[in-house]
Image (tube, rainbow, N blue to C red; front, side, top):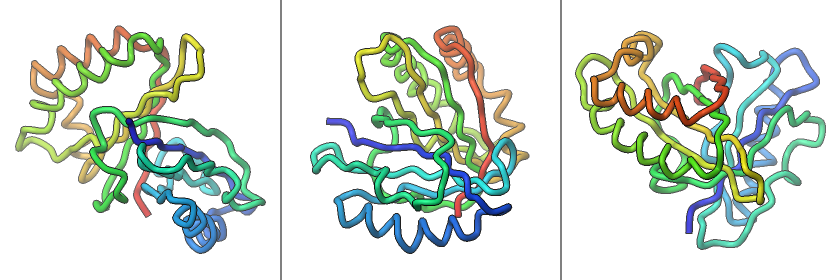
Length: 199
């Protein structure tokens, strides 16, 4: 059974996210852990995310108890966006992400019937996308929407880079990866990406 994840984009009432981060770390994350989940990561935006917003991803093992992550969110935080997701080829465990650096969140509008092919194309592309001395990059998670009976949904790809120079260089990957990414693009609708750093 796939591990379960929940993505949140949260907005504080204040002009910055300092108090929101403190509340997440001191109240929300311990509450998730008491329920059998954990915090996969909390990120601050670099581009595309407000200065008073944070991204947070909670996780629970697929063979564990079901966890409702929303009740533990800070009561004064506005949920701008939320997605219930399942892991696919990555991550291989729900352990918290260890590496600092640049994380890009990329969302894909997809037909649910295409999710398996998108995962397969991505997995194959990563074999050459990561195997390079031109840049440092590693896809950390590729998530599909939890089944709800609908025909469409959003997938989420979270990729780590050691900095923006690597992100820019990775726009021209090996031909094998580029071909797979092109085919993946044909299976997706609109996309949106946020540049963030792990806190």
